[in-house]
Length: 300
Image 1 (cartoon, rainbow, N blue to C red):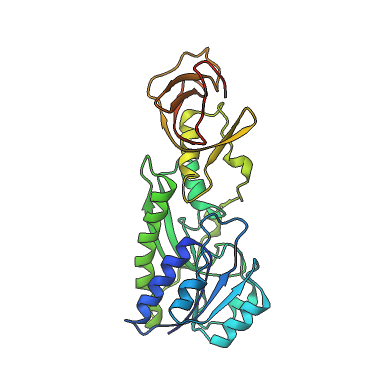
Image 2: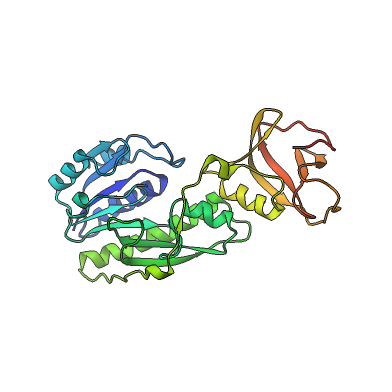
């Protein structure tokens, strides 16, 4: 089976390396890779063309747009039976979708049809969800709406952070790829049509979505920080005209008096700062860049 590959993020590189491995052991041939030169919005961007070229695979580099004439012409030339499009972050047009007889297989780290759309791991952590998913599906001209070829549930631990959840999803997804690649080779794949009445779509996040508001509950701030931690951009706040990035926090168990305003510094020890939040809650800032120099009783 001839596989074409498209991708532009860290997840894409993991999957590409797996396909290269399968090319040596299965009835599989990686015939071409489409990579992006850069990304304006993927903090986990990876130029997968370097990996492909080092393995002797033909590569087509494109800028931002998935429907470029060059990408379509390249994919038609290499004649894939199926295209794996993982971490492309834009919708494909009919031209590319019509090329492989087995279709274009996409990936979404959520339990489709729920939670389609942008930034699924970030939203899952920000909203305090207890599980997400790893879903591969046959792509169409809409976002994350095509029939499902493989889906697994991925639990989210109470203090899961973006890095650990990302790695957990990668591990689950790589096993799925092994299985459904064998099924595609054997023409044994089973597609499950999504029930769109059960679907919702998460919107694109903005810089403002990463701003900490001390009027939020401590739990909400903690979820935001763990959601935006590495490999993402980090949650931020402003103090005296300077921008600070928060990489780790801890919710304080003890309740705070109800007459203390949000944003007040309650404690400051060993580079850890305790800040009053909404209601009776407060939160420790465990890792902040640059170092936050502030006194007890001051306000953020």
